[in-house]
Amino acid sequence: MELLDRLLGHDAWTTAFLLERCRELSDADLDRRFDIDHGCARTLLEHLIGNVEVWTDLLLDRPVRPRHSGAATLDALTTRHTAAYEEFALLARRITDAGRLDETWLDRLDDPPTPKSYGGAIAHVITHDMHHRAHLLLVLSWLGLTGLPEGDVLGWELGG
Image (cartoon, rainbow, N blue to C red; front, top):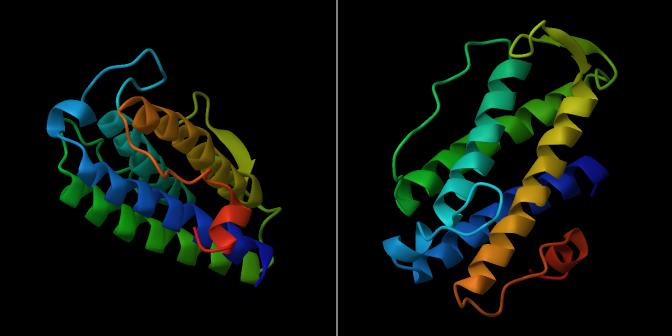
């Protein structure tokens, strides 16, 4: 398995796994605020998924879809995650296969717009997800979930 496929597979699976584990929580638990970035499990999930959506839109040079607001259900978040990550992974694979990782594109959300490399943006999405999944893992442990994965690539590779 190539490195990119390993990283994409781990990223997609781990977020999906944590979405599934969140089904063990009540809505009140999903929305319980903690002194951590993004505050609660539901908002962390919305941020993770929204980030993949926004970066995919930017990389494809299309209008950025509107941010979701409100308390999204786990079903809605799971559907969004599946669709967004499938599109992002296919795009990352196409860019890589075409040898375009070092080419730049213009990030028009920056003011002023900033040129960025495709490879840097792909790596950013994957590492950003891992950063916020670590926050989510901490929140889930504070909410009493046990048997959570460490969330690392080797753990995923060995079966989750």
